[in-house]
Length: 462
Ligand SMILES: [Ca+2]
Ligand SMILES: [Ca+2]
Ligand SMILES: [Ca+2]
Image 1 (cartoon, helix red, strand yellow):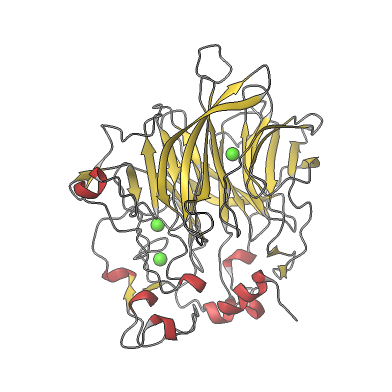
Image 2 (cartoon, protein in one colour):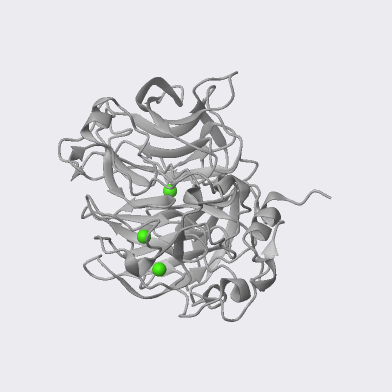
């Protein structure tokens, strides 16, 4: 019998039996007391990845595996395909058509009806697969309701089959921000590739447009794809890199005051919400979550010696002696600690006995309305592996999270992204069309409720 990929993945990290342990912080929730009704807005979407509320009152959706940008009317679920890419490449769960961002002047009669996307393509079709990620601008044509006049802003960004980041947003500073993952290096099938999240390009590499070190970074681009003059100088060079030391940031959101937040997928513990500062090092792979030596130590499989990595069988629980390990506490460089983690485990926590403790975060948004009491200025982050959305209340200055997050909308599904209706009463979530999530007893569930859909949650005002 051929086992599904998510079961094989769970076996590789040795976690099947231990997921329901009461010691696992994932099994303790502050369940939010507010009541919501749920409605399926639209289904049969090809892995809806980004959902963005548009100025036209539609949800702008990227269908990752169907290569479509689709506008969905939230009132009746009708779909309007704005463009279908003919050169996107997708083979696995983390590539294809990813991020989408709308120009702030879209549909404001200012001649800037621009829509930006990020997608993977194969640079040498017919000669094996070499994925690259491309950032492209389209112009929205209102009369035909379609995206036209493609211009490639930045191309040749390295991409792989795992941990692709890919979230795209326009900041209040009029720059494009794009997250890049660490390609799943040093992990599972990619265990023998080095993680490059700490590597920074030299001035010569930037000059040669060699973007190979853009893995595990958050990038900041001018709207024409060029490097902004005020990007941080790192390692003596100014590049598109805005922050580094990331694993797989799949969520980005700005507050009105210009503060940037990210949601980042951790290893077996320590998913993070981060406040992103220019030039900041977010620690990966030397530190996961806080620098606390709990559960995580950097095991560099790619540097295994004398046994070459290729001869080893990857396991996150059994680290061979030939694989160099580095404790978090031995890293003495500057790094930015997260605002909150999912989850920091207790000292002495046993991954083997109690299982992995992550939510697998993806999309991130900021709720700013006063319509739901107490929610103003809360980060909302999707949990794919836990089938829930979490609300983390920001402090008044937005630089901290107050108290423990609350869990909402629990279901056997994988919430990929989120959008908030400006009326403050409706919240939308997109769902993957396959994969593993968590059932109500903490067990792995492979049959998803409402796969490949957009769901609407309406606050039940008393
Ligand atoms: Ca979104
Ligand atoms: Ca970090
Ligand atoms: Ca840690």
